[in-house]
Image (tube, rainbow, N blue to C red; front, side, top):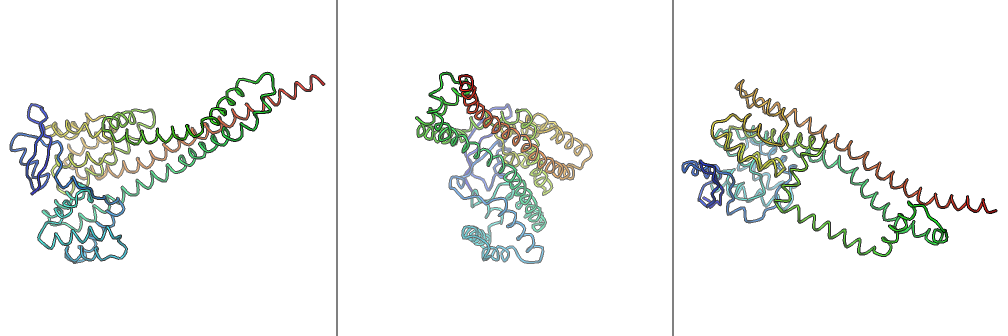
Length: 399
């Protein structure tokens, strides 16, 4: 048993905290329920130690190999031994697999052996295997987990691929600005200084160029400081909460982000619920996979409403950050008594929509960045050519 520090809610809505020994979070939830307390979140002593989490790609491959071997008739211990001896695995992965194998050989349940490693395996995966241990369908659950994380890896790769071009454009834009103001414009200083009157755009460009030239290192240091400050500010929960709330309310982009967050939640809920995990535990686990702290913070009320007897569709309908399509689909699933199949179907639809949303976001960002670059270059051209053209006119008029 492990000691958990927890936050819970009383029947009258008061938030309390404390610590309690329990086998796992589900056991902790049951113990607190006997005291008329609803578990909000918990952290075990094992969580204090840092473990490098596996990527979605590694999790998918790990679960797929286990599922395939179990379906072929290989025992769990032998399957784990084979994974720990796999030449394709990294040294860290082999060490993790070896530790799990040793624990399972000592009689520790597979899900508990994974949980002991802290942050290596996500709660979603651990709880699905825990449910499979009770139902006896380890092979099919492992393959379902593999499918879950393969889709997550595909979505992450899609996002990374879609944002590569905008990132390149941003770097090019910064380099172009640095070259123009740091090198090109100073070449015209002598020419423009001999002119009696300069157009306003030229004066603005010369002033910016002079500032770049005289404070180049200060600008570099300032940019580094801003980046570092932004990096640490985002780690402050309150700041991240404000940023996440602002993101989903932005025009156009906000709607697209809602689709992505809803797709993540729907897929996780579908995987957990179809594995036989209680709906409250599903909600407690799924909220941590959304990726938006503002949406996740609203789940304390969702869980409280669901425990009070409200329908899942009603409870989720209060969440600011999910698209209405999910709420309507869940309601239909509840009325038809087929919530599990409806969640599976919804997850597939939303994953398709999320991929399309990513493409739409890139389609919005790329033209804006190209327009900014074109406008900047055009303004510089006007600033340089206009005074030269005026000087030619002046010479022609006096000749």
